[in-house]
Length: 368
Ligand SMILES: Cc1ncc(COP(=O)(O)O)c(C=O)c1O
Ligand SMILES: [Zn+2]
Image (cartoon, rainbow, N blue to C red; front, side, top):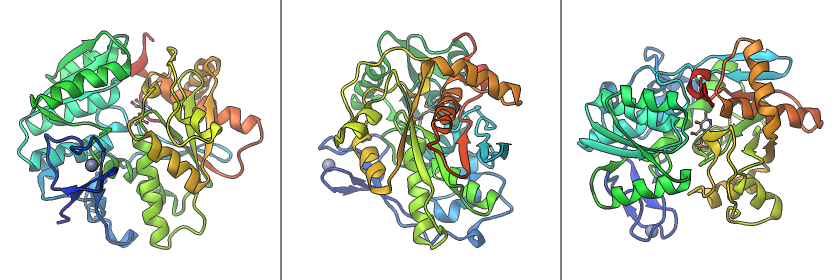
């Protein structure tokens, strides 16, 4: 087993994973001090039909994952047209890519003996945590902002979780949840703060590598708090280190024209996310005005020559219709990534093959 250690991203202090201290006493977010063995297709357990087939490269303290897994991961990678591929990450137990991270976070909570979790979410991460908490026999409470798609709220309740619909923005909702976590009322199973979440989302790239035999030229990734984005770079670092990448793919960070603190800072050459006043957007899943790990995302974008892609709001519905016309019924936030991709391609900015994640299912954002 791989024994993980939490390390503060600000002061460097190391500590054992603790379900109740969600960040360092200095306020810094934790990273994971964890060095997996060099990635190698031979290390995959082909008898395991979930992302835990990669467990040789995951920081699992024990076998708790066996009581938690619902077969998440192993989603199809399909050619949409020409050089464009999609990875159907809505084909997951709770219909979004967040199950990758939730499976890891709840497996950690289970191994730490946690009985009660709380979490804040625009809907999908809350759905995932609620489902995995139910599976692990934990009580769960999810904070969502007012205006969250009713389908997502109904689904969270169906897992037996309590839903707190908070009268405020997404960022204010997160702060209300954190205040409760600080009061010690429950473990904060946060997709943003808990570094295990990114160990789950990194399997997105492992799978692409296993499925396609190589990585594409471009990876388009929606960025709100950046849980998929950060997982993608973790995996790219590992594959590069293992000598498996002749060329690192270009990562395109996708944000809304109505809420783009990372893209604005990137364009302005700033090290910290820009202060933005989020205007409501159909891309509710990425409407994050204050991304906790924003400075880290900006550092990675600069280090690796990432590109920025802006979502034109008016193109979201046509993009959703176009994907459905090809058989893929996705939620608005996912259509938004496709809209940004089409805009970049039309502008002649994209060369070679591209993979887009279909992060969320269409039924989730009906009624938007
Ligand atoms: C469908 C969908 N896509 C993308 C994202 C963005 O994820 P993150 O905030 O981790 O960047 C979310 C987040 O909830 C989402 O629900
Ligand atoms: Zn610290």
